[in-house]
Image (cartoon, rainbow, N blue to C red; front, side, top):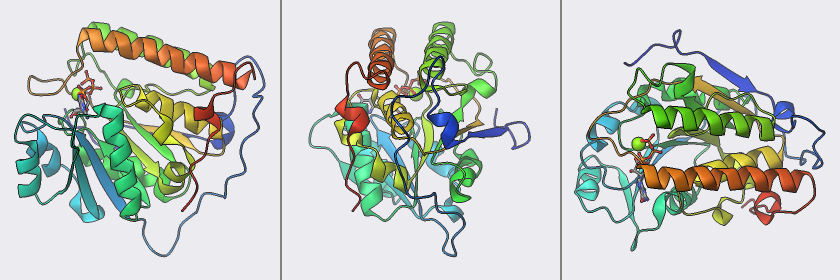
Length: 290
Ligand SMILES: Nc1nc2c(ncn2[C@@H]2O[C@H](COP(=O)(O)OP(=O)(O)OP(=O)(O)O)[C@@H](O)[C@H]2O)c(=O)[nH]1
Ligand SMILES: [Mg+2]
């Protein structure tokens, strides 16, 4: 199931592509961001964040695959798990942050990114702790951020064969439908938007107002819409294998329907914003750079 770099290619789309909209000119010009830092003498500080909820059965396996030689810190944010997630994370020596009450997947990620930036991360990798994503791919995932050609990298299951990896057919087709729609709206050519393995440059997280986003699963889609709206941030993807298995956490049908409808709303909001029909604070706001 775990592949090598030649079997799993990568592509990076330029910032120019990131602001192109199919069927019309963008109405919001790319924001003047400082240029992406190219190679610097000091290597970027890589911090892994894991938004965790009941991940006890898979955390050790996920941790074991992380390429520890290139990672400076691993932060796990626990969203009031009912199992031994926190104990296992501490045994593994992770930095553990515990929410006082359940805040949801998006709320969890807000804490993750705040903590990573505070820890001085140059690159932040978001990895689901349910062992569905191949952490050995992290060096290839972050390479375009390290060399300055990208700010957002996605580990895509759809550059491989998701059905062979056990993805349920209804998830496969809804993922493809939403991805096609998002590509048209955002003017991109990505193979999937719904992955749990992502990497961000520091300047992206400092630029994007992610605190305004939902605390639920649609957070991930809102963040990509913000990246496109901001302009000037490179987006790319590499292939990762698909892994569905019994112990993995997997969103059920009802929550998936809510997620799908919420994603449609993100797309609609983005299009209305771009057409200047209705401005969205989520797509215009900025976090102050510390
Ligand atoms: N904070 C928080 N995290 C959650 C919650 N549900 C799941 N998670 C975490 O978020 C990650 C993703 O959730 P999954 O249920 O695996 O959903 P998914 O990976 O997007 O969907 P699949 O591709 O079907 O697995 C998991 O690794 C969980 O640890 C939740 O209610 N709150
Ligand atoms: Mg999962």
